[in-house]
Length: 383
Image 1 (tube, rainbow, N blue to C red):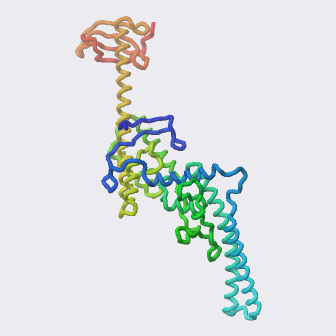
Image 2 (cartoon, one colour):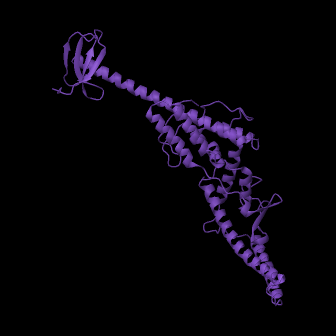
Image 3 (cartoon, rainbow, N blue to C red):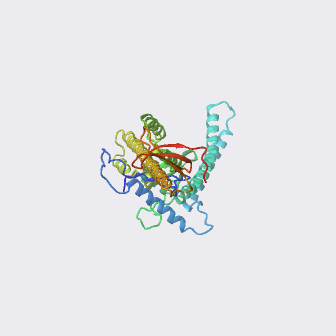
């Protein structure tokens, strides 16, 4: 891949119209994992989970209640409700025999009865949240909204919770991994995942692709490219501080590293991160590498913009010289005027004609025919 920074207006990241190829701007990292090539394992695993969900959803029959509960889940709810009602009835029967409402025994049974009511309310809310989360998870996978920088182990938990996991790769959800929820104390729902009961409320929220941050980086680069000016030390320092702030959120950093390979080219850093998960200070080292790369990329963009502006300026000068010489030779656009003279600055002949912008200008030529002076002529009228 070439090191040239190309602004490609036809491509998009979210709503952005500015893209650039910076895949190999800087050298490889110094941490363990240097030199690893190919797609990072984090991305591979999360892609696999996404494909499994999408395949499952594509096979659903129209009108099927995707969020309905299984027979075992319905049985678990029924058993829980019956047990809690029995607990409530026993407490109510016992409290009816206590005349002193201020006694500790009375308060104890009141707490039991209130606890049952609260568990029913909590269970209803969690079931509603679970159904919505399952629909949202499937929809986010279909829409490719989830970040490929998610912890694959946490993503696997979600796959199992929602009944999507395909451990043997046969493109069917594994019955051995389908973990119908259990009703825990207080009406909380949990899942037996790898012989560990994981509460639904403790499951990790999904991480989404940070299109906003990616857009701001690319649009900033586009603006620098179009300006055609070099970046100062102050410009670089300010940009570095801006990135430090934007990438403090670990989820934002994961998205920039793992989600925008074709636009930001962070694959090698992703491989380094994969090889150093859990290492002391890993996230600070990765953040530093990402910032260094983005700062260098912006300077490369600025330099390419300067070169492009220089090419355009030179083309304008060449066009002006050619047009002026043509006018001096009587071949120019319209009719110009030409006089011979001699001056201290080496002008031996002057000619009036159009410059590169179409404005009437008096050009001074030396004895070799080179333009040595030029000044606008406001009063000259074309014939």
